[in-house]
Image 1 (cartoon, one colour):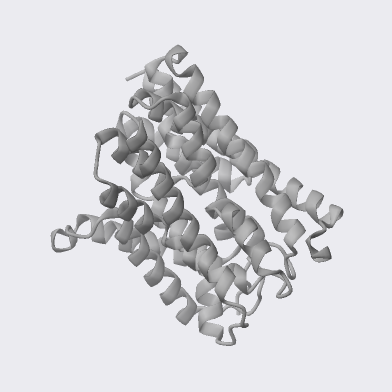
Image 2: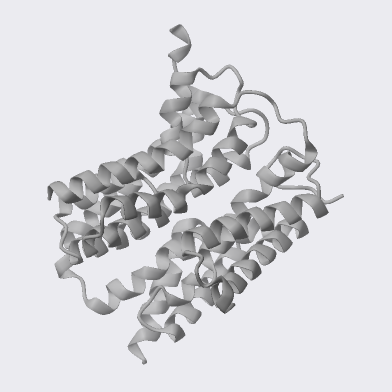
Length: 244
Length: 100
């Protein structure tokens, strides 16, 4: 298995690309650590959740259910539904990575696919190597766990008003990812707007009220990206889609 | 705490599987322009739907959340990093919260 050897340059380049994600994760993970400990979980459990799950929305929702004492099935199902979007990202990355990357390597770096690492990776030009992917995910994994630990252990020292304010961190990070490409590409802007509009409609029109929030996101994503792909077929393989 | 531990392991499992299954199983190149375009557009659609409208309920009051959202949008439009956008939004919510 000599191919397992890591290309240092690719790794370092990937790590650099992951650094802004690492920093962005800290306030969001901090919020998570705070929330988990305020809900009665031990700080180490909060860190264990971040280390083993490495996800934002799914982990927030799942942990809230643990705090409420929900059943295993409900916890697993809710988390799964929120995470189905990763299948779309993973499928998308399968087209973007070097086809020679082995199964074991895929199983390793696949753990680090998040909304943010995925967005970063899909905006790269050309095929992605295993070393690049490893470099990319290393910083974010650290930032997510470290931020959680900070939040979990300093929990009681923080005023309530500040911890309330941190609830917005996760969403602000999502905004930071989608706005710059939306500025440059009209199709991407339209797709974001379509997806948000559908999500709002499903949430507020009473006949759709049986749809849970996780499924709402999935339906909005499939319709938004589906309509977008029909109206604006992308020419380029790179993340920044060129207009026709 | 055994309950929380088991629940966490379950969560980790249902988070890991959707991440690796497609990339581990699927090796062929997709030829269809439609599907390729669809896959490229997924991240923007998903993050948009995750953010709006939930961001408006993410703090203790609607007003502070709207202020935080506006600041996040402005900072992101100026292409500031994830960290700056997140911190800017948190501070805005905190400061506007002091006046309510």
